[in-house]
Length: 224
Image 1 (cartoon, one colour):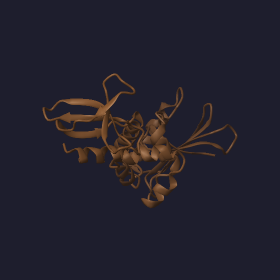
Image 2 (cartoon, one colour):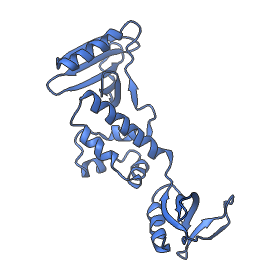
Image 3 (tube, one colour):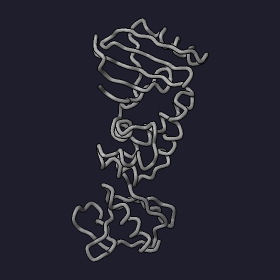
Image 4 (cartoon, one colour):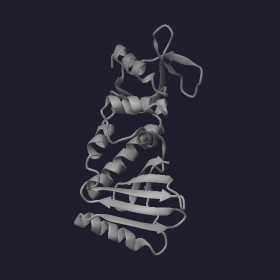
């Protein structure tokens, strides 16, 4: 690999919280190195087992070079993949599928950039003309390991899931309320083929509101 090509990859990755890179050598082996560009513009690497000793990097035996991103990239991709799997299998929320597919194709660099923005995500969604994915959904895709939840039916209420599955299969409106820790509600609208799961504080009109992506899995939409 030409050193100028390697420097460009490292320079681009500097926007992300990483110094680690995966390298595939000309012999087909994979190695991992910490790389950076010095103040003099030299591509350097840290010596093995050292946090301060560095040497100029030798790229002559490198075939490919890719940055090693943190686990947040993996979490984002895992969340998006699971959501697409549930949506495609259930047939619900067809308008959400193309938007999640676009997120699935985003580069690691863009995902890390979104992660670093924290709460400032609306500009990205507006520029991309996302109409259904909200800033709160995108924020939780990036950060929440428990973003995809399972409906808590409660003891003796599993028949409600069967009823919902049948309603979705027959394309019939369905609404059911039951009380556990919260006042729980499941709503299915056949015309739009959309479904929701709400957990409201008892006797209140505020709580946690979710999108139902199949007969048991939900993603958080908002609190109020």
